[in-house]
Image (tube, rainbow, N blue to C red):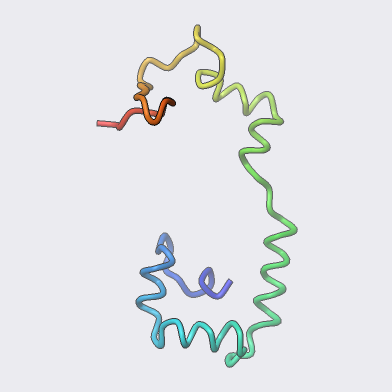
Length: 99
């Protein structure tokens, strides 16, 4: 939660940590030692995130209207997307690199 509250939008964790003044020692002090007195707030925020979490892929599988949008990937040869190409990878197929 501290990362969510302090990172710039779309910043990955490693660059955020590299820019964090005090680095890992400071992060440990904030999260474990509660030097800023934020732990109760961070825990409450985390609990709200957990309660409100919905897996969008699970919903896509369970909801026929959403699942239909992915039909050209699942057993629907007559509806294949002509722009999607596949390439072999370790005896399986993967989407080919986009150009």
